[in-house]
Amino acid sequence: MAHQIKNLPDMINMPKEGILSITVEDNDHYKIVLFMMPEGQYLSPHTSTMPATVQVIQGKADFTLGEETHEVKPGDHFYMPPNFNHAIRAKEDFVFLLNLNR
Image (cartoon, rainbow, N blue to C red; front, side):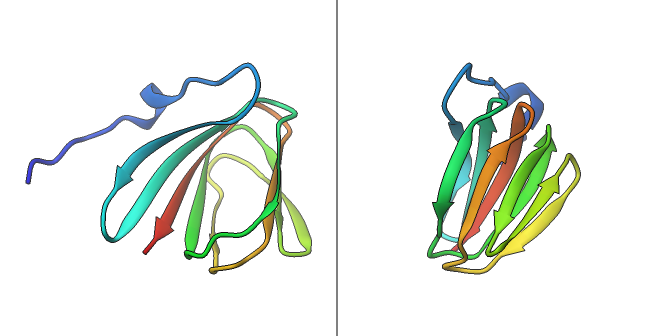
């Protein structure tokens, strides 16, 4: 198996509106997705059937986890269990890495 090194900053292409996602890796064990949200973009409350981690790459956002809302910033990292309700509102152009574990 050949290993491929990917540079995340080179993959960032902030949309003018809407949400852009790029799959970085997808295999039997996990799926890693780079998300880009322009300032003001909102992702309504939803859940995932898989446990996940989020790592903030760029910008700030209000990230609602269950009943609590947190302002997240570059360098922040957190875990979400399966079926955990969450939502996002970008306060600035916002980029994060989502790792879904299978």
